[in-house]
View 1 (cartoon, rainbow, N blue to C red):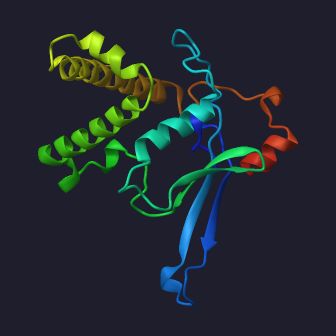
View 2 (view 1 turned 90 degrees about the vertical axis):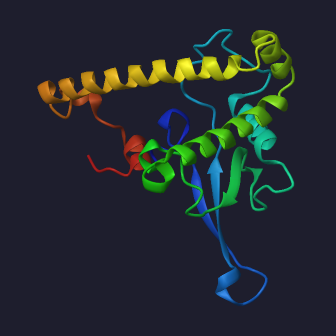
Length: 205
């Protein structure tokens, strides 16, 4: 299990599998990532709470299929079951890294690059919505006749969220300065990990 890479940072099962290519040459070998698609351990706090008649893991699989099943999709991407666990299979490549703001620097952080990225992500999101029954009509009703309504609303939300993140960063920095790295937390025996938890997280205690 790899800590910090699951839904809500819950550790999930992850394997790297070396697959031999068609020839004896190592150049056509490929490394595949086989990764668990688990249910999130966070509560469904947004009304109505449950947004589909399937499990969260199955909804994640369906959304991924709606996004990536297309003629020019990654040929080594797919889903399977591993001992009862739903897993995602894809090539392990440097290009398949998580989208992070910290990487949007230099040529990736220019105005033109950010517009191109936003267009690509918006197109991807639209494809996912189009594959979800009932979502597209609901969006159309909400937008009405204004074609720029979605862009305006999204911009307002993004700006408000950015202000909130900036405010939270300042508050966290102040708490860190005042309380130290543990933010005032004091461990006692009740906080100790049990043997199974120590094995999962790979720590000796």
